[in-house]
Amino acid sequence: MTDELEEKCGDARRSVPEPLLRWTGALLSRASQRVRDSFENRMSGSSLKSKHYGALILLEDGPKTQIELGRQLWVDRTSMVALVDELESSGDVKRERHPEDRRAYLIQLTEQGQTTLKRAREIADEVENEIFSTLSDTERNQLRGLLARLI
Amino acid sequence: MTDELEEKCGDARRSVPEPLLRWTGALLSRASQRVRDSFENRMSGSSLKSKHYGALILLEDGPKTQIELGRQLWVDRTSMVALVDELESSGDVKRERHPEDRRAYLIQLTEQGQTTLKRAREIADEVENEIFSTLSDTERNQLRGLLARLI
DNA sequence: TATTGTTATACTCTATAACTATA
DNA sequence: TATAGTTATAGAGTATAACAATA
Image 1 (cartoon, protein in one colour):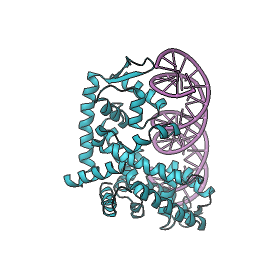
Image 2: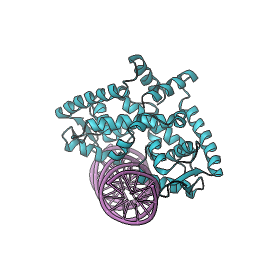
Image 3: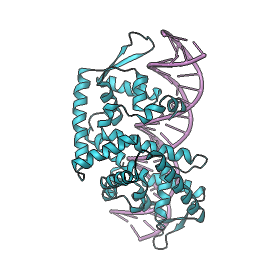
Image 4: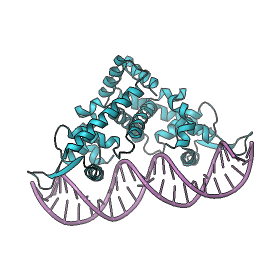
């Protein structure tokens, strides 16, 4: 989003025009965009975008092949190459050969990746606090529960 | 999303990996993507995307300049040109000169645009019925209410 | 001087097709 | 034959900068 638009639409951003309120797709799209923008603004200076954050979260469970990571992130295998390249060049993950399948890599978190993940998680918490500031704790959990059920 | 991925991830799509469930950004992003994909798949054959649908909804209230439409849709004025071009060439809107400001156009729905809007709204209702099938009516309204409050 | 609409342009994101090396 | 990873490439989508006409 341009600064120009950011500035001009500062209010529009927080006020969805009434007719759009009835189209849940619009609500979801704005909410999603707001969270992503806020996260990436707060991470500025770092090259870590929300997709990278998602990858780090999934890798915390243990190493995964690019294909498996892509499946869980809903990212095409050809796009996974660049995603992992970026995480590797920032030092947050490394590619290790899969011991039982020489076609595949196992992507794993480095120590630095664990630090990055920790910081990103703090940022993500700040984002939620900002964006959900109008909701009570009960309502935040309600929202998460409802969203989890429709995916 | 590729057919290949669609096929392979048919389940993954509906099951967000547990660690991602805690990051609301991921939930919102998937839900938003699901609604948009479903809408655009059902509209296939037509060139109407969700942004166009949003524009038609807003124009139902009456004619608007491109800038005003862009503000409400959260679309840059340079991107509005193509968006309105597309709606105009499909015959759903027309550009009329603004009577009080000769720099501006007033974009207005054509009769065909009203028909298109009606059909798109039916599709959107189908999408909501599909995606919210796991939620009761009360829960659907709850979700919409919560989303509306955080935007 | 500022704003509306426009073009040219560039950058990101993501998808397709074709390749390699393995299985 | 099929799969993991890769490359090259092309198509959306969207941003920036600069311009003409008008305010």
